[in-house]
Image (cartoon, rainbow, N blue to C red; front, side, top):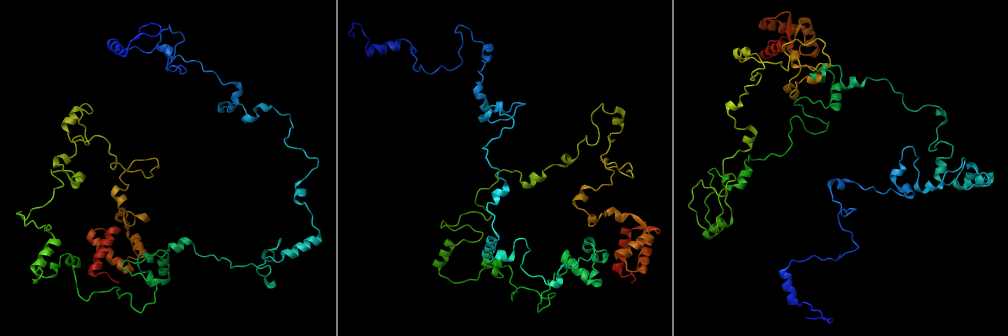
Length: 453
């Protein structure tokens, strides 16, 4: 095909055949001339681009001087006063310069507040107008509160009752009378017993709490609640399984139409049996169980995960526990001759005597400190600073007698002599004895009824 100028132009078929026979060429025109190309351009196109040239930084132009005042870095420069950007170009003011408008006359606070000084007539009229208010009657300006009038005979007197010195709070909370802890306080001082019940709630073991109600009955013998006339037991079991109501465990025979009985067997569920779906009785054994087991293979349960299934050999301590199995760390003849020898120093030094005055900076345990069991399960007297070992320490007869009579365990000296003599014969001691030995013998004689009063 020819154009108007006489040149031959390829047709569509010729273009398709030519494009299929030669590779496609990229366009030589820029579709977006206003957009710069991506990447970093070279100053000289002929230069070879290298790694060093890529890491060379181009100097960034600085901030214009007129824009520095807006930057935070310029405000916080060392040695400069922080100044608002709006006052940077104002320059420095001369010394003694003051802002504002200067007035021609001097006005102080007194003249501003007292704009008009009322006359005595105006004050009287104002007082007559404000006299109708309760605040002016009850709380007049410059006078005390006039709610009530103090009689003339008590003018200048003081009100209230002076505080009289009483007992200390420690004595009131923890009386020195040790009988309050042994249960004999009620016989000696009922007021102190009532005080302890109100402050501490120290009810004796098995004692009924009383709130001083005025009842028409004896609270020590009366029981509240409703009792059944018949001793009916296993009510829940009988409600679920009515056959348990009878001694034979089988419901009594009742004559009902077969249609009603068949309907009941189909619509109602029987306890411990699958529901009857009308498919007949399956030929299965009595021990058959329906459903899929939750555990198809033998696997550990919770008990095995907590306790494990270790054999006796696996539970034994390792061979290197307390002894050296590495050759060269100890003399060879010692390891070979004495294989049970334990090397090292124990963490609890019970093999040496503890110092009389132990320093607070001494972390060593000499075997006189409480164990983990004593910390988890302390003794009954641990809160008072008395340990179990204190009951095993021996003390002379005079000190033991004073202790037993003071705490109330022994009521008379004759009783103490009888118990001491019996304990001395059994334990073979005479001059000193522990509290535990004396207490055991005292309980033994008390159960046998041989302690004299």
